[in-house]
Image (cartoon, rainbow, N blue to C red; front, side):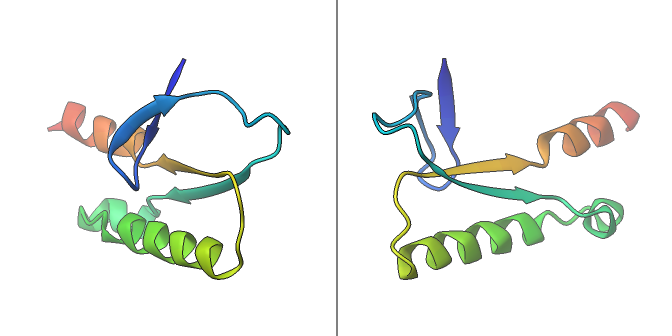
Length: 78
């Protein structure tokens, strides 16, 4: 199984580190942004989470994003 690293834009193996702990960062497209057609908030959330993890020295950071379902639905409706 592969996981898409949205920060670096690459696919990485979807395995947990040897110690089994990760820091999970999650962002999603809000309903307000869905109506405006603006996913900029996802980009802002991702940047904030990345900086926060770096500043607090979190390790084994994995980023998960949940805007594809909404964007896919919008394209089906058009």
